Image (cartoon, rainbow, N blue to C red; front, side, top):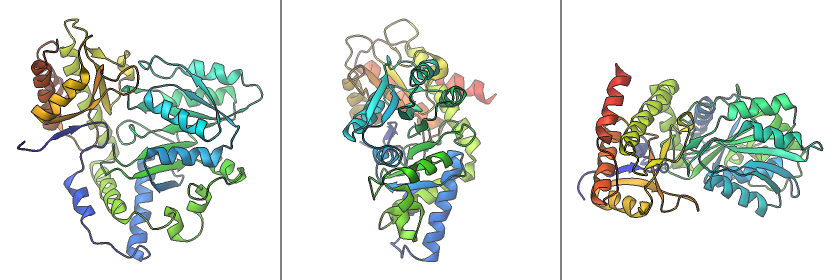
Length: 393
């Protein structure tokens, strides 16, 4: 198929030319002053994106690796954690915690609403023995397109006085939505390279607050590779658990420079603007009560990173996604998890994107809807254009 594909999955995302060029650099001596300086600048850039002055550990791993690192450093087998359900990815963390011998206390969810701070507090209030060592929160659930107010949840936990660490999965929200680790008093925040940071998959990040560092040093060391202490102390190469991922760090350095050049506030504003245009299109497609709808029921909880769209009953959303990809060159995310597989598609609007790219993708989706005979209201692309015009006025 001629032309470039419109990649609109919520990860991996488009890799800018500047980042691709960085990957073409020759390998180098990772103990040279130049490379150590580059790694230091990556640390500073990540701290800015996380909103923290605390250290950020870089793992050569997917986001799952950074989550396992949080469990390895802050818990021991038999410890209790509280994990509010948000969708497929919260279930994945629950499975991991169970495999590691942790006792998971879960708060059920319909996967269409954000985490309820009151339910979290009620659960912790009942934990009078303070068995729960960690509250693990997904900021933006990539499977459902719902963003939770982790700042309010953290504030409520602090007011209750429960000592549990608060760890946040920001894999989909990092660089796409406001995230202020220090101001929100979060203990651990986890990110990854392939979403808002516009890099290839392969790196994950753990920002570690002061309380988490203290607790990690009192835990029996169950892991060498994941250990924060080993990463933060000693010779340079220990930062990466061995040979640094040189070319991925070249890419990360360039991506963080691009974010700094644009300005983080402008990056977040751009994401909000593009997300609003996609939501305007979905509103138009769903306007006549045909059964198409947002998965996220409450508008204020709809993610800036992606939009999860439920298709009308009887429509195979996976067929729609394949048609969009194979006929119209638009790559969408599919429905994930028991409640959404085959019944929803996801439009990613994060990372290296601008207005024409989003409008082109929406046009491809509208063509796919028509091609598959999916009931939908007209004028989704026009609604998106109207939104962008009004927003720029």
